[in-house]
Length: 266
Ligand code: ADP
Ligand code: MG
Image 1 (cartoon, rainbow, N blue to C red):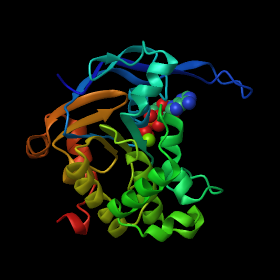
Image 2: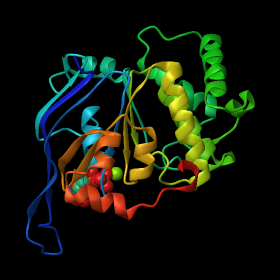
Image 3: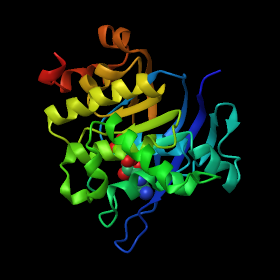
């Protein structure tokens, strides 16, 4: 059984009809997407800006409520889950965002940021020393100093902040991480370090990734399979190297042509 099963998943937004007098219309951000994510794999989700990638990724965690369709996680119906069930489910599903500057609370020390998920989610919250020990171990896992725990987000670079975001996501030992353009805001060389860290952590923690990016080379570097998304729909899905060698869809060819290989991946 796949870890995640999406069936005919859709999200429609009402747009326009506002004070500027545009006609009201519907935006089909995600339109009838069905796909599986298998335990232990990296599924790359690639497509140009605005095609619906973030909406799709967030609907899996139910951070965005789908308009229709179904989401199954490890056999459980996510959309039917009660508030309590959803909270327990979210222990197993975490998300890393594109912008490490916006996703960390500037007023919180790093230790409080990375241990916050334990405080929110643990039915039996660990003792303070146990949480501290967990935070220290996690800093090491993501390549940061223990001393970082006493500092604040503004004291860190973009790449270091993304490491902190990853540490926070990992604290509950989730099974699935939705990585929503985690390196798109970073310099290429810093992004390469983060991509390699994600690869390493996948082994170490037995993670499953949905890795979202607009960049085909980045997706290719990490993914076992890729799903190519255009205008809210998956237009091609399959083995990464096979699709790149023999793209069936015109849009995939355009994506492949549009993005040169960053140096670190060649
Ligand atoms: P991507 O992550 O691929 O760039 P998104 O999922 O963010 O794409 O957006 C998909 C489409 O849905 C876009 O056309 C976007 O403008 C629209 N959209 C996203 N969020 C909203 C919203 N809250 N209200 C209205 N339209 C939205
Ligand atoms: Mg997005």
